[in-house]
Length: 103
Image (tube, rainbow, N blue to C red; front, side):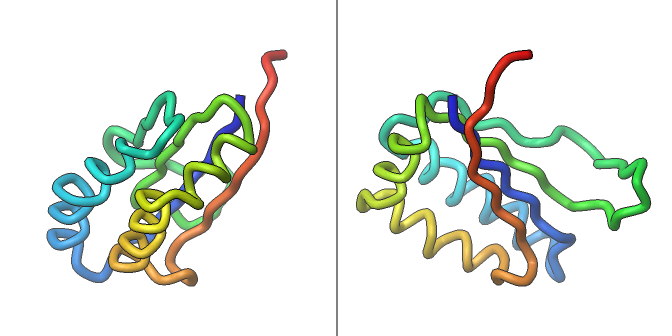
């Protein structure tokens, strides 16, 4: 399984972020071809390593990295990429793509 983890810093306008994220971004991302699951944090995020607390963490799951890359090359994937920049600049977000394994 492949996973995308998106970590958003606290937005300047939380009300705008929340409204846009839930009304536009999530419905758009849920249309990604091959998306198996989309989960976000529920409530505050605490750091036990003295890092600044992120505002929102999202995890998107796909069958493979190839499936994920294909999804983001699609029209919907391109729309998601553009829309994410409405929510946060590249400096305000961290995005990680990786394969996972059960241990």
